[in-house]
Length: 224
Figure 1 (cartoon, rainbow, N blue to C red):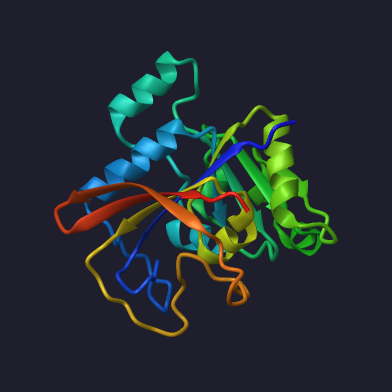
Figure 2 (cartoon, rainbow, N blue to C red):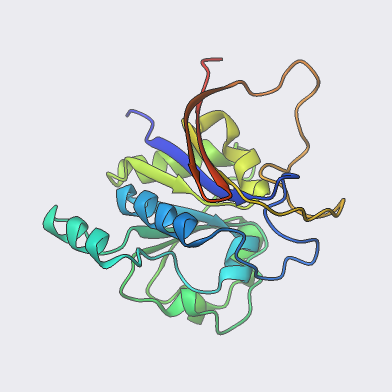
C-alpha cells in the first residue's frame, strides 16, 4: 500500500511560535489565513490533531467556507474531512464538543494507558485504535488511514505531533504572521527532542504568497 500524501498546515509567529507559553487560544492568522486553512481542509480526507491542539480548539476541524463545502459534496465527499486524534494520555475534559460531533467521522489513535483512562462516553460515536508503543507512531497511523482509503492526510499540530510525523510529511504549509511571542517554553512549529546538527530535515521552497502582513509559504520535503 502506498503511503498517503501527508501535508501540514500551521500559522506561526516571526519567532517560530504556534501558541503562547500558557497555550491559551489565540488566532495568530488573519481572515486570509483562516480561508487558507479551509482550502487545505477541503482537500483533505482526514485532519489529524494532537491532544494539546484538541484541548485548545475543543471543537472538531470543519470546513467553514460554504463554497468549499459544496465542492466537496459535489465530488461525492462528506461535507467535512474525518477528524483523527493522536493521544498518549487520553486525559481530556469530559464535555469537549469534539467527542460529541457525530456528524463528523472521528478516529482516536491512543496509547494503551490512555485507552484505559479515556471515558467510554467520550469514545461513543468515534472509533478507538490502540497503538503499539513498541513501534513508531506515524507509520501505524498512516497505515491505518491508508487502509481506509484516506489518501490525503492533513496535520494541523501541535509541534510534538509534527515531530512524530516529520519524516512522512510531503509538504509544509506555513503562514508567517506579524507577531512576536517569545517564551522559552512556548510551542514551536516542531518540538520533540530535535535533530542533531547536520541531520536537520531539508525542505525546498515551492511557493511564496504575500497577503497584507502575512506570508504564505509552501515547502516540499527533499528526498532523504
